[in-house]
Length: 82
Image 1 (spheres, rainbow, N blue to C red):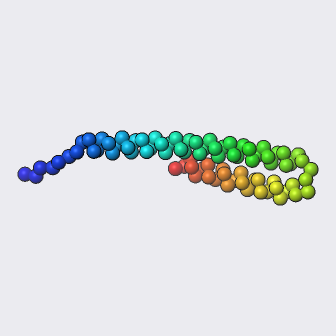
Image 2: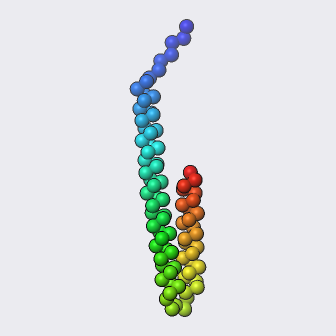
């Protein structure tokens, strides 16, 4: 006969830690999602300001900001998928 020792307290602590880590990750993902959405909104606002302004380098600035928006949208999409 084989006697197996099982530490229920250790298993319980591991499960609680895993739960807390999972909960913390969800919170971090939520914060990052909100931050990315705000950055996208701010950049789109800035693009609108550039479009209405009369500037010699307007097209270059618009391309730069649109690239930044695209990058942040891709990051947001990847974050949501995980």
